[in-house]
Image (cartoon, rainbow, N blue to C red; front, side, top):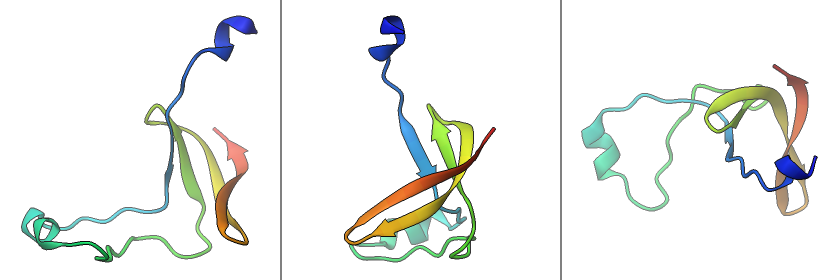
Length: 73
């Protein structure tokens, strides 16, 4: 167990995706909104080192936002 305690893993949460032209992306400034293909109640993807490892749902508690794991892959 001690051998894996020092291993660092990058964890990412994918809320949704969007395809937009590069010129539109370059025009966007601070506060711009990018519409995603997901709905409010959709599950999110949980990635470890850019590989899918689980699915989850967004949890909001006061000022904090987290993800609750609903299933592992």
